[in-house]
Amino acid sequence: MARLVKCGLIQCGLPLHEGEGSVAEIKDAMIKKHIPMIEDAGKKGVQILCFQEIFSTPYFCPSQEIKWYETAETIPGPTTEMMCEYAKKYNMVIVVPMYEKVMTGVYYNTAVVIDADGEMLGCYRKIHIPQVAGFWEKFYFKPGNLNYPVFKTRYADVGVYICYDRHFPDGARILGLHGAEIVFNPSATVAGLSQYLWKLEQPAHAVANGYFMGCINRVGVEKPWNIGKFYGSSYFVNPRGEIIAQAGEDNDETLISDIDLDQIRQVRDLWQFYRDRRPETYGDLVELLP
Image: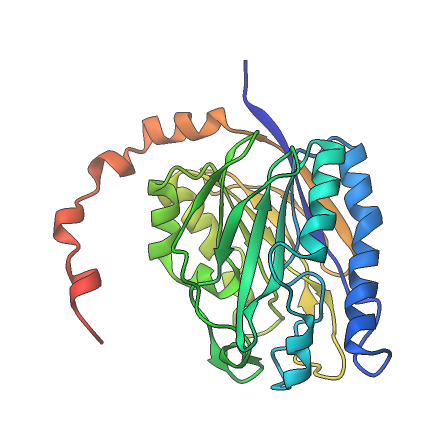
């Protein structure tokens, strides 16, 4: 019997922009906008659901303003507690990318993985943090310190890689070595320099490591920063590198696809990349400094 898992990705634009409410009101509006989409996914039988990067706020990193620190939450906290209830209600695994506060002055770009019984399995903290014009992430996020965990959920073994991480193949390989069957990459990426990479890098990770990926992007232009259009185009890609479902570029959408996990075995039995690896020759990856 095939191991079919129904997976969903939510791409969503801001209901309130800066200047249209307080920081708390902007965050509250974004969470409330997600609730009917979560409910709809649950009613449609989605078993694993993932949101976009720091889903409950704007992508505020074009600025460097300490007021956005106010949107960070402890884990557990109000948002994770709410999502645990929805996970339990619908027997649905939920991957919740959010702004995490460990203590005052220490913040991470984090994704919490909640199992279908409503229990939190753990977190992934974004490892690679960019610091370039429009993406001043080091002002907001400390580099992750939890390495590359894989979470054994009720339906599949799940890994997470967040946005800029996708430019680094090393962590993607480690997730495969740790047993990931599907890796989610919640992102915030705009049209321009890296758009052509959106459908190149992640299918390459899926092929090289023999797993599925769910890739999520925002939609719309977020004021007042106007760094470009978040072009959506969230998608699922299989271990052959084939995009099997894709969302549109402009609209809020919950993309749903059935994932056949048996395909992982079929592809890996054909392409024996794990058998033919030569890790004893890869020392330069960790021994040489730039």
